[in-house]
Amino acid sequence: MKKNTLITLLSVLGIGIVFFLILQNNKKNNEEKVAVVAEKNSDVAVRTAPVLAEDMSGEIKVNGTFLPNRQAQISAEMGGQLIALYVKEGSYVRAGQSIGRLAGDKIDVNISSARANLDNAQMALNRYEQAYKTGGVTALQLDQARLQVKNARAQLQSAQLTSGDTNVISKVSGIVNQKFVEVGSVVGAGTPIVEVVDISSVKLKVDVDQSIVTQLGLGNTVKVQPDVIEGALDGRITFIAPSASGALKFPVEITVPNSFNKLKAGMYGSAVFTRASDAKVLTIPRTAFVGSVSDNLVFVVKNGIAYLTKIQSGINYGEKVEVVSGLKASDQVVVSGQINLTDKTKVKVLK
Image (cartoon, rainbow, N blue to C red; front, top):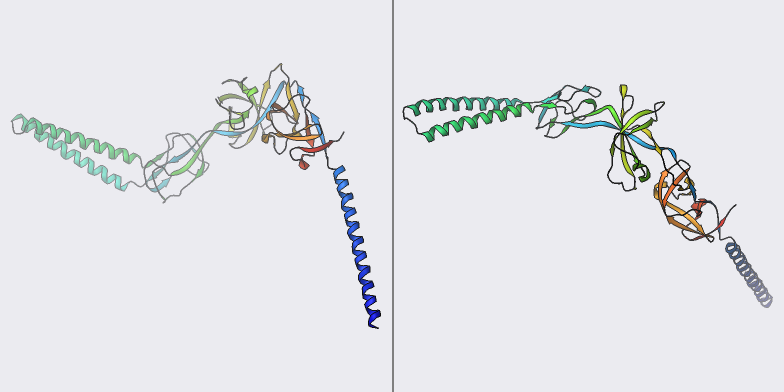
């Protein structure tokens, strides 16, 4: 009986070993087949487009943001308690207008004291002048009395100027955009009380390419198209940056009259420039860029391999973007499938 049981166990064990070896062999064969398939299909499918040399003369739109003509935070020139605020948010103020007042009790006391000191010094000087005529005082004593009058008068003028500082005066004309403190607050010298914004005219700030900025001049008329208003407005270039920003763009400001204050600071608009050039420019589709256009990265396909390439982009023409450097005409750039690529990936170009 025991012998038969042992034989049965050995048979089962043998069958198990054989089955395990078969599974391992099948797994190895499957892995080899998968590896072969992966090797055959290692190329990433992409679509490409050529770099073109095109004539892009004509109108070019550059987007920007409207800025106020002037903007200032109105502050107190001295510290104290704000006891009156004559304006509120939305109020119109003129340059030189008082918008608030600080407590001046201590300053009034200083003025009274300085005036009394001046009166005493003046009376003393009168006595010294009479005494000097009879030889009762020396010339030196008379000069000292005159100096005391001069010093007392200067102290009174200083106290009076300080008294004027209790009035908070707006240095610009415009609309109160924001109020920072309430009546009763104790403020320090230089603490902002309100913000005044002048939008009687606004400035559209745009960043332009070097090929455009060389054709611009201060005072030139430019068409401006606000996003929120139908039609175009005539603007005048009032600022051209002397140096480029980090993105190799030149900030330009175009001042636009703002009748009825329809345009607000922070709104978007476009400046329409006319580009006149006989030379052709290199362009690629906007979809060729990896990430945003400002990143200036594209994949260039050469001999079946995609190379991540840094370029310098220029004017944005909508669906096309100018290439200033980094590519040449007829180069092939990837326009679809970049998400599956890294530098030097093998690719298969789809027709």
